Length: 213
Image (cartoon, rainbow, N blue to C red; front, side, top):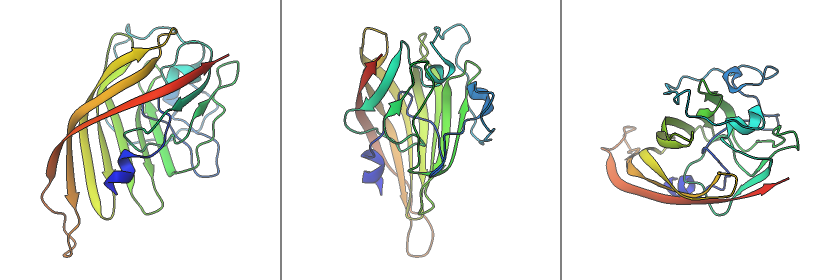
């Protein structure tokens, strides 16, 4: 199960977002779209500093921390974590999100006071719940630390991580970043109880390609 977590294809500018299977994306109202249905989520999130976020071309682009007239965002290899956003991001010329996300169910997300996604929660068909919380940001509004949990019937996998940014494009959007931290795995035993946690160093890189209008 853990290998699936590490090698699940996804395009995630912030490692995050939402959409139920066969449904349009529905966001928490804090994410800046008045027409969206509110989806509450019980994740404690630390807001980014109010003066640290530069302007964006649309509310949807702001949610994903994307600057410029972005058309598509695609992770080149694999994202380190499973979140509600699976697959490439696509935006219309006005900056509105046109992607549909239907790989997972019970998808929820929250945004900070600046309208940027900083927490997601979703569920796989086997009952595994994936939770992500981004807890701190750099002056440009990029997340620099967080926690991730994959809570399934066979194991619980938890990661505390920091993020460093290695490459940016001409619009100031990152194209390569590195996750480093510590992971903890607890396996389900035959008696129905979880084993003591096994801790390991965690390090994964993520690269993405961005196309503009």
